[in-house]
Length: 221
Image (cartoon, one colour):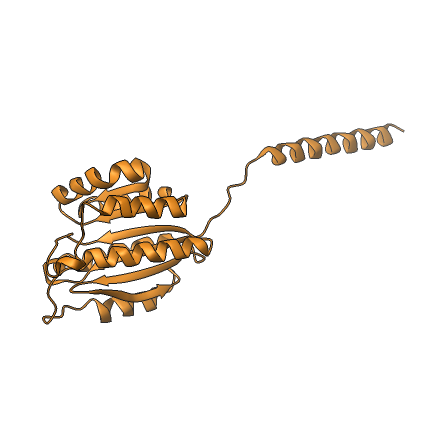
């Protein structure tokens, strides 16, 4: 008889534990995973060649920190700008081959079409948001304006362009890496009021790696 009572008490206690656990779990907020789309703008112009290897390493490092469900696009910047890779950030071999083949210095090219490249990156961001991604743009380069004026950054209109993207997507981040501190301070002055501290990340060559964690936080990781 005593054994039956012990068994009953044990079963009751186990049931109570299960109920408490179930109630506790029901109150735990599970973080929703939102896939991200990162548009990289990488400078392959003559003025940026010395820093390009480090920038490519940083690009690869960030890709390794992204999720296989994320999506990236890489835009090459020089005299003009065009897409040199799109797909999974985990396709390290394809990314490496694309970087090696399409970021080589071309002596026939002159200028830095940052403005054109950013317009393309903004367009991709809006399109990817429509596909269910959280968009972000990462710019790696010295931000020097050279060559065709129509393809350069217009710093007077850029803040409004960024605001338009942020308004249309609802969740938009930007990161600028490897430019000199004076340039990055100028970026902060122009875009800080639009994106805020959490959604605008800047980093010099000495702080680039540290900035990656801030960027991941900005896209919700």
